[in-house]
Picture 1 (cartoon, helix red, strand yellow):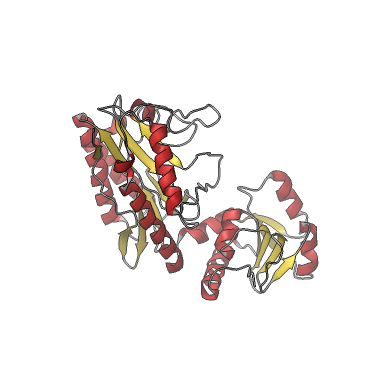
Picture 2 (cartoon, one colour):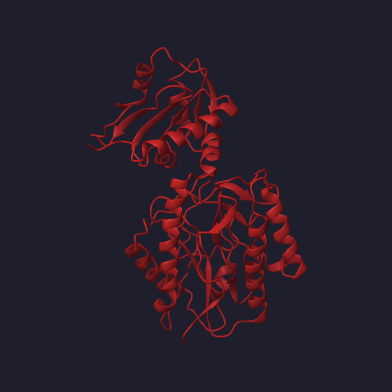
Length: 391
């Protein structure tokens, strides 16, 4: 039998209760979920349709495609207008929709199903519920991290003299896909397009992108203005690798730096500063700590070492140094100067204090950490020092 919910029953109920706890805080009486990431969170699979989550009672799965999915609460529909007939007289006082990501026309159509219900934004409800991972989720992210680290361990052996950034990236992509990487870089919110991550060589790391990245790269074409741009890997330049870690629907985020030949002392100093920031912030990361306090401490360390002009970009600077990671690459909490987020048990956070050194390239590391059981666990424990390619 092709069951619609692929999660263990206790895990499914745990997630339902987490969502309902957030619904209660915002006085949402029912949710109608359709976004792929939220659907995957609730069911352990993606399907075309809607998930109706009332504050009390049974969760209903309104399915359009694929056919033959079975399970409690499954109702097949051809169009959303068939939903009210199933709900019957149990019309909620308020209905939550994913207003941050739904097209306007779809939001209007879905609101029309519940003309007597107050419309509320469910995007925040789902983001808050997903911010604190269950042990089941942590295990999935941990497994992804193991494969991510293994792929990075092979990068020095993929390099050959005369390679360009794109040629190296293709080899990394090949190894990643053979290791089981799904290839998808799932992102929430504002339009941000990226293919499997970035490999940035030398001066290209200083090319501003349309996105809030510390370094973006010019890309191969204006239609995708980010990442590798066919720069040859030459002595004295760094190679920053920030590649996809999605191996099971949950992502890890990791950056490491490679180089060919000797580097300027400034680049080495900045890279060590990044490592030191990680160690310092890991000591600070505890439930109840303000996310902005992590940002402030990192900035203090950068200023103490006179590295601020290169911090989180050179020509263009990013406005954050870390972010939550899970089903999507940009979850809560956000480690930024004006963040209102408070760290909590179960948060999974990617820290990425990076630097761009003119004419040399990008340096600094990114790791994914989990806050659980009173400790901080690094889920991407690869060597942190700069690795040098053999000439």
